[in-house]
Length: 404
Image 1 (cartoon, rainbow, N blue to C red):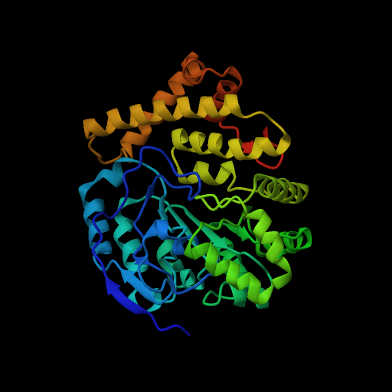
Image 2: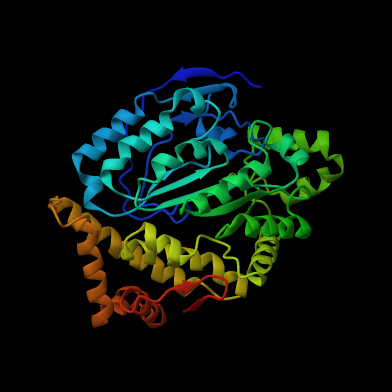
């Protein structure tokens, strides 16, 4: 067991002030992570890359923002979070808010306690089972989404690539218990590592386990290796434990992109095959529309849907350039309208919760009813979809890509 060295750093902000919803965390705002660095010690973690400036030993020298709960409480007291409806995300791709150190310091729990008075939903991303400790607190929020990262079902493989994280079976239990508690929950199957956890049989078994646990989606994603210490560490691990895969990694990551992205041929083939495997079971490959419709305003949920469609439709061979242009245009409209409403500093009155989101949704509904939405996005097909979802209350099914 790695004993962490705690280094105190000061948070400058508590909760972010985003203009557009995050289609990955399914959140309008994000609470800053209390920790930088992570005791789970995942060898593939993007947070190890130089881009994120984590000094020292990533899994041992943990920087801690002890003042974060106080800043979040200040943001809530200021009232802005009560003016807009939208999930607040707890999680990060470069650290885990429920890493082992949380057991001692409890900063994530304190942050949740500070967020309660705002009355917004919560979205949690973790591979830590410590989230179970906070189910009593999460049950007091209006809606909750728990997303559990699961890279492999093989405990021996997990012990090598995620040495400080809970075993795969324990993470599946988090999903099962989250569903039993009435929360929305699913699995982030990422990163699937070439030759290690990306096989067809591997993903089929993961889908089986997800279904048994009650997961509402399984979101697959491939490995990225940024040039520098992240890539060097993982390539050393492959050479040590899977030496026969060395040539495959040299090829897949041979372009040495700054983003760490593998060759498009590998990532594209993985995405297509995984989506088809999920689709064959009726399992959404991303958090579906009926989840983000509960966690976000209608206006933000529509934006998240358009973002997800940009990933789902290419797997059917559909040219998404018109969709991308329309999404950008809608995003611009959403930024302008939200910005104008925020500048008015609309007061939250008794009996009128989240007035800014209500006004934004009313403007969207008026556009859909009057034909103005088509003029904004320049896409009549997408405008028809918006009318069905916003005015008729219908939903969009991810596995079939149809309105139902």
